[in-house]
Image (cartoon, each protein chain N blue to C red):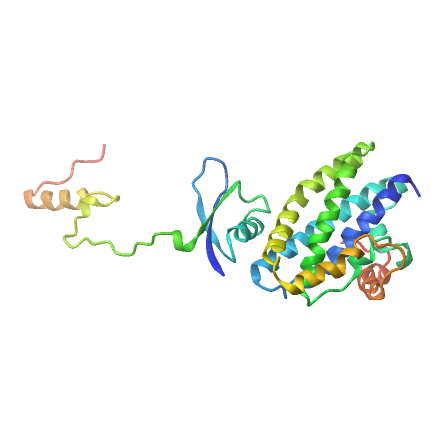
Length: 96
Length: 190
């Protein structure tokens, strides 16, 4: 039995999201089982059925030097600004 | 009985009784995904039976439930083929599934060409769902193509496909179970 990962698209144009997995002897069975489990109640407009082995899995993300300016949540300017103000002895500008 | 009833009742009875028989696999199919898929096909078959009974009921002034559950055993016109109790023999179950879907496809083609627009329309709707049942049956047929138990089962069952008339012995117990609620509470609906 081969494990297939199933991704489903809820509405046209939306991103596919992981729905779950099915065990099947080959791709044709996997397609049929995915259709029954993730598509027959009108909950999906499309499915991707992918053998789990075809998925490249990555677990390690090296960031030895804490280069936080690479992160999507951005460079924490607020903290740095607060520290700078404290050093300079100035208060933040009043709210407008 | 109307022409429509004569045409549709044997088909509705086939779908109901086969659906009933195949539902005996729910919870004990060879593996989980197959259990879900096979049970889902069963629900479709019973849904087809319901829609066919409804067309007949509209004409006879009765209800789909009354046709499905209030008739005496000798009034059912299903084939002996669908009555056979095949649990727990998966090879024979799949052989019947494959043979039935093949025969049902031809029957639906004929219904789709009917002069009765309601019958032709329903047949077209049913056929769109049956396409997936046929895919499922086809997959298993290919998978088991070299399996001696499956080939034997095909040989055994093929001649029985459209055998109508008397019921099999096991039909009595199926009828008892299937009609139990309506016999104990007349007109029960749910």
